[in-house]
Amino acid sequence: MVNTISIIRQLVEKAIYIKQLTPEIEKGINEELTRNGYISDVDYEALELLMEELDAGRIDLVPSFP
Image (cartoon, rainbow, N blue to C red; front, side):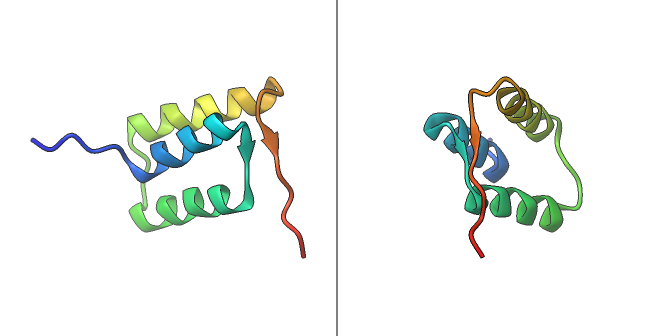
């Protein structure tokens, strides 16, 4: 059995590490959700943690520029 970390979880970890949700990270998460067509329990928990961190102000939402 191969121990792999999902792309969504990697992106969430990156956002938490840099303390920013950038447009690139958000786009990557959305692309993976669209590609998979479903969300695993692990990805759901990672996204839930990301939302909690955003709500608590520990991660900044970086706006996209036109």
